[in-house]
Image (cartoon, rainbow, N blue to C red; front, side):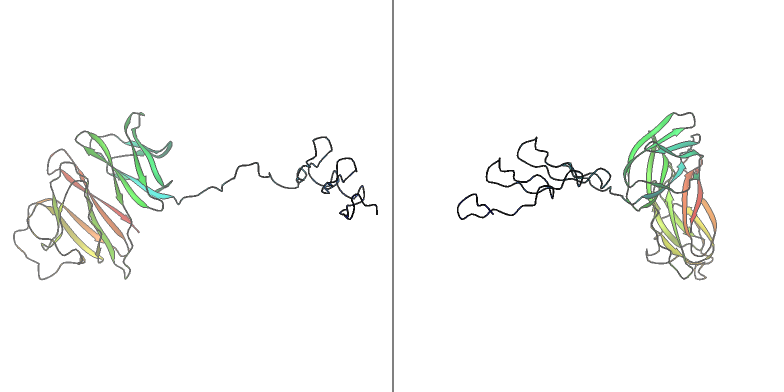
Length: 291
């Protein structure tokens, strides 16, 4: 083999035709890196674009798009929330409800609750309107991913508002159920929730307040809602059927409203107090059950 420079061997290169363009003896002492023959890969050095060969790329159809200088991130999926709506707006006609631009409730009358719907997690815009399209309220509210909640449309002195109530609760097992009270009656005084035997289950439940869940055993109960100065049961104490030690207790308070409830096993009970008029004692009950 002929030596180009003294004592400096030439790096062996493929024979012409066995690879891409090679050293042709005219462009100096630096051989060209072999590249695939035309047709064996993507665009290669064609001898007309200078002395820098083009990096081979896959032929069309042999691969997806190559990196064009920007990274492509996979979509991030957040868990959905589940929400339902309660119409506690006394004096208003049936309503429609949208989450962002999606209508989720077509017609919801007073003292009615919708089924749960799925909604994107995060802050969402909720619109309440009449059946004629008039918008009563538009409000942005948080819907935490994976949450379960009721959003009540309520009266306020200046119009309507939305109140979010968490429905997260675990059933107790052993056939026991859960019970709570939510006061959504605008003109309601703070009310106590009593059993017929005089025990106070909850004290001073005010407008827009929702109590904690308490465990309740299956059976028949009569709940009284009244204004009293009695002390409530300890928060950890379960609601049981009538206790003979309290039966016959005199001077039961003058009740605003009462409720007879047949409690079944493995069920969550929420008693909503709603307005039935504009007076202080104009209150009705609405029971919602979840299994």
